Structure formats: structure tokens, C-alpha cells
Image: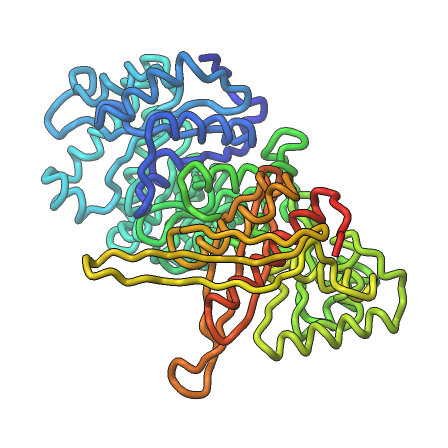
Length: 535
């Protein structure tokens, strides 16, 4: 492992703690391989520090540091080991946990220290003076061993409210012992921006220490609190990718960094790295096996999506009228959503996005608008089904629906057997390239059986379909008149290994709605593969 002695510019730190604090989120269980992969992504993004975990506290984190030394050549970040101050009544030089921090090989160590008097007395069960000595002894010992030391003052803001003099004494003890940065932690996440700004400014003035901020998101203000601390003079921000963390999470790395770069004008990443932000965010979400948040600021797929016709009209003139930044700056893109709110401008912009030439034909665009509104009244939704919308547009442009096969009939049978098992069978009868095709298949559910039967029938005629895979399937029951007499909407996402597309079907039963979405999915897959229609 190669690590830099110091970041090129040490005046401002972006410190990521996804691998420790972020991993405490419910539903996230990282393997060592996962942690190594995420560390590489974060280094590619250009954060200055990556906190890898607590070596010695569990075998996984100990193994991570051992493997990171051998397997990762950090280009931008320094690896950080997390641990606690020595035990009460002991010596840092003899503390096994402090020894494990040194053995991790990490060039930077973050120590957590109690700064709330009540926590010192009830959790550590020691005196306030001994807690200060624990901070001094541990920091000075690690500095003497050649390590750079940061100190996280846990529960600082609550401690400051209870006993400001003691909370500041902990900051002074850490700074005077050699800590490069003392981080004020809103551990319970209960602070608001104005409160954070006032406390940070006061502590900075009273102690002279270099300060950082670690904000939890329990009030929904973690990003705002982080930036408020920066406004007050903090020069070190601790965040997690996508805001992962215990309870409701931590300050989200990506909005914080984007604000610092684009709103504050601070250079905190290597040149060109900000444009990789959306990719990095989604890549990390894939590693932790959580669906990327569609509405996350800057990097969500809906962050620059526009639906209302009024917005679309303005964006057609100048995208900046309804966008606070150019989405390309953070590696994202503008999207136009098509719905019953759509006007001519929405349709025209969406057609350009999808590569369908409407030629500025007002009559043609008007027909598309009216057809979308009529279909949405029936329950269709095109904002989440671009492929079905493209097929709709092409049908208007070409004067008829694009067809690669003609359906004679289909049926799906669900058999409930006496032994409690179920059988699902589907039969489809089609015409393609002048040939009548009949196929039957079984599946895990009637929709899966239909999908398989359709594939069996058509793959010989269209071998391109062999690459298609059903990626996602969503059902929504729309408002009905009486009980089960409701309209069903189905959204299907299909992939071919190179990309995904979504199609929609609407009917009075889920099987018929699914069949519509499947037909569109296969039709669009063939269109995407460059196959000319034959029917």
C-alpha cells in the first residue's frame, strides 16, 4: 500500500467514514471485500481521508487494514484507523487497543473521546480530570509514534449545552497534546444549523483549536449543519457516502462536497473528480446492495428531472431557469418526464432525449400530447416507462405501431394442487415473419410463465431476444369502483446486458397488464437491437 505523507492542500479536509459509521446503518453488512471495493471508489473520488474501521475491535476490521496495506495503492486518500482513548487508570503505551491502532499501519488515527460530563461519569465511570488525562496521554503517545491524530469529541453539542466549560476543556486537552483536528460531533443528531454555527464559532474563538464537524441526520439537517459549521470556521468535514449511518444516517458526502465545490468555490477534490460523483454514488450503493435513492440531491436520477409543462417550456429556452447547476458538473443529466401534465415543450424535449425526430411538427407533437393525456387518464404512466413512451411516439411518427410479431392469443393457467404446491403454465400463439408460432412454458408464477412462453416462441425467429432478461417487476392497484374491480398497472424493467428499459401495461387484471408490458419490452428490445419490423 502506498500512502501520501500529507494531502497536497491540507487547508481543508474531506473525511469519509462510510466504512465505519456508514456501515452501522440497518441493512448494511459489509464484507472485507466490500470494504476494499468501497475504499477504492472513495479514493477515486478524491476524498482526503478514508476511515476504515476499528482495528482490534473485530477480526473483519483488523483484516481490512492488513489487506488494504497490500492491495490498495491510494492515490488521493490517507487511510485512517478509528479507536478510543486509553482506559481509565492505565497508560496509553500499555493499552492493547492503542497498540492495535499502531499495528494497523494506518498513518492517521482518529480517537473518540468523551466530551459530555455525564457520559464521562456514567459511561466511562471515571472522573472528569481522569478523562482529560486519558485524552492527553493517548494523543501525545500516538503523535510520538509518528501518527497524525484527529480527535472526535463524542456528544459534543449535548455536552456543551450541559457543561460548556468542560466540553471546551476536552477540546483544549486534545489540541494541546498534539491533535491536528478536534471534531465536534452531533452524535445524537439533534442540532439545527443556527445552533451549530453559534457553538462552533464560540469554541473556535475560545480554544484556538482547528475544528471539524461530524453531524448525524436525526433532524434532517446533517448537510446543513455541516455547512453551518464550515461557515463558522470548521475546516474538516466528516461524511458518509449517500448519507449511510445508524438510525437515519449521517451527513451525506455528495451534497456536502458538491456544495463546497460549486457553492463555496472551495477546491476539495482533484481536478475532474466532481464529474464522477453520480457514478461513484451509484457504484457504492450497488456494493452495499441498496437501491440508489432516486431523489438524492445532485446524484439521484430525479435530481434534474422535470415534469410540469410550464417547467419544460422554460427549460426549452434556457435549462438554467429551473436547474440550480448544470447536471453534467456532477456526472448527472437532465431528464424530461412525460405525464398528463406534459405540454408541447415537454414532449419535444423528451423526443430529443430519446432520439426520436418529431421535426418540430406542431400537429404531430399535439397528437402525441393528446394521446399521452388520454392514456394517463386510463392509468398509464410514462414518466417511469420511457420505452413504452418511445414506442408510442414512433407509432405516431410512422403512422402505425411498430410490430415484430402479431398476437393471436395467449393464456395463463395457475393450478392449485391438493398437496399445497402450485403450477403455472402459459401458452402463446403468435405470427412472426409469416409463420404461426405456438409455445407453452412453465414458470415461477403466471407472468414468468408468459415471459418464458413468449421467449420460446420468438427466439428462433429473433435470436437477439436471447440476451433479454426481466430485471424488475412492479404492480400497482389503481383506484377502483368496488373492491376487486380495480385497474392494475404493471411496470416491467428489462435489460440486455448493455442497458435497461421500462415498459408499462394497464388492464383490469394483473396478467393482462403484465402481458402488455411484456409485449412492449420485447418490441423495444428488438428495436434497440436494430431489427426492422416485419408485421
